[in-house]
Image 1 (cartoon, rainbow, N blue to C red):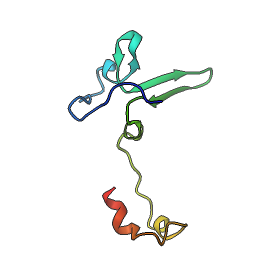
Image 2 (cartoon, rainbow, N blue to C red; image 1 turned 30 degrees about the horizontal axis):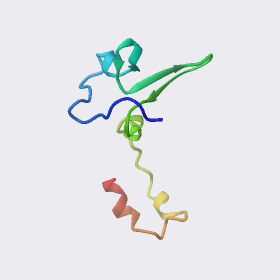
Image 3 (cartoon, rainbow, N blue to C red; image 1 turned 135 degrees about the horizontal axis):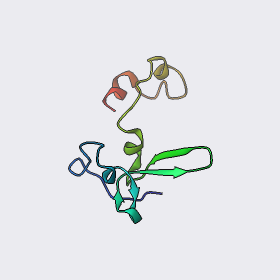
Image 4 (cartoon, one colour; image 1 turned 90 degrees about the vertical axis):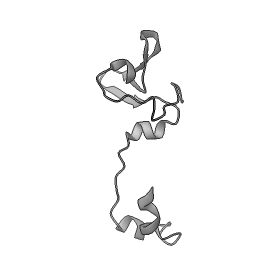
Length: 87
């Protein structure tokens, strides 16, 4: 479920020192884009924003080895070595 507000480059927090800009707990006045869920043996920090994929990935994308593009059902669909670096 997507909740929170739509984040843009203009309203993203510039540092992580203001907790109210990072955590989503509206009842406490916190309007950030991460939620903490507490369970018996684990605490989960997860993204909470509209278009949450980029929030969840935190702009960290792994570059796979070349063999990934040469194998599998997608191997002949495109020139992945040329196409994927721009994504």
